[in-house]
Each structure stands twice: as C-alpha cells, then as structure tokens.
Length: 231
Image 1 (cartoon, rainbow, N blue to C red):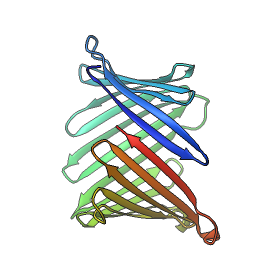
Image 2 (cartoon, rainbow, N blue to C red):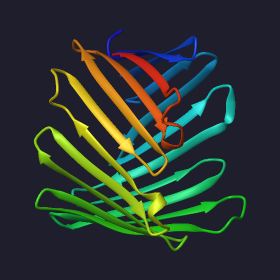
Image 3 (cartoon, rainbow, N blue to C red):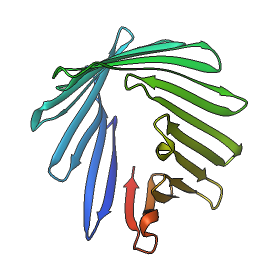
C-alpha cells in the first residue's frame, strides 16, 4: 500500500515468544498521519497526528479502552517550543527556549485532575567543549543532574544522579566500534549491572540481547532478554 510501512518485533519472555506489529500510514486526502497502528497480542493502539497552521496535534487511543484517549499540541520555532497535553489523569504544559547556541532552558508544569499537588520543574542544559551537562530542579525540592561526553568517536560515557544521595547515581558506557554493526552498552547502579548488545542485520533488522545481574547475588543466574526487530 503506498505510503504504508511496517515493523515486526518478536520478544522472548521466558519460554514464550510475543509478537508485535506496528504500521505507519499517511492518509493522502486529509493529511492525517497514522504514526503507529499497533497490534501486540490482544492489545491494540492507534497514534495519529496532523499539523495545522504550524501547530502539530497528536492523539493516542486503545480502541477497546476509550479511557486511554490522550492528546497533545506542539508549536515549534527555531529557538523555542511550547507543548500542551491532556489525558484522563493530568494536564501538562512545557516550554523551552535556546537563547544561546550552546544551551537551552525549560519549564514544565503538571496538574493532576484528581486534585493532587501541582508538579513543576525548571532546568537548563548545555554543551561546552563536547561535554553535555544538565541540571533540573523539581517541586519535590530535588536537583537532578546529567553528564555525557564522547572521549572517542565511537565511545560514549554518561552519568546521572540527584541530590537525594549517592544511591541515585547511574553510570553508563556505550561502544559502537567493537565489531561491524554492533553496539555494546553497560549501565551500573548501586545495586545492579545491566549489559546489552545490539546487532544490526542487513538494512531493516536488529537483534538485541540483554542481561541484568544484582550485586547482592552475583553468583546467581542473571536475568536475560532477547528481542528481534524487523522494519
């Protein structure tokens, strides 16, 4: 079908294999883009979008559960963006601005419809000398920090943490040059080590193998995962 593309994924969960089919289709008459038409087991999903006068409107719903309906609107320019979204649980809005070539500032607000306290965050991020750094302060009175840089063209190092304590720290590494079409990554927290290897097969297929081991049980069997993606 013209204007239609698809992706097929198979995920191994224990002794079972779970399949997922995702279609993308642009309706030529209305200009509505069905970005994701998803079938996964007995679960269905529809995500569509359309741009009107520079504003991009998006909608998402499970046809069997109208309570899952959600929507958003986004207006972007070269140096700024404003977004508003709504679902059955909350109303959200955000704004970002890039007054300088190396940095961006942002503000986000979320209003829960059940009457819970308003949540907000205010932050900034920038890249200097090839090092990306970010800092976000939230309504929970916590600072969130991020850092990422590439000491080598195919090697990426990253770290995140917050002001609640050392237990929040996460450190990761990704290398894309150990073998052709292979990306290897590792991430460690204070309680577990996660390792993943992604192999690209041809133009449209990838295989992903992951393993997780908790430091408190290093002698035990790690949790393994395998995923195959086509499209």
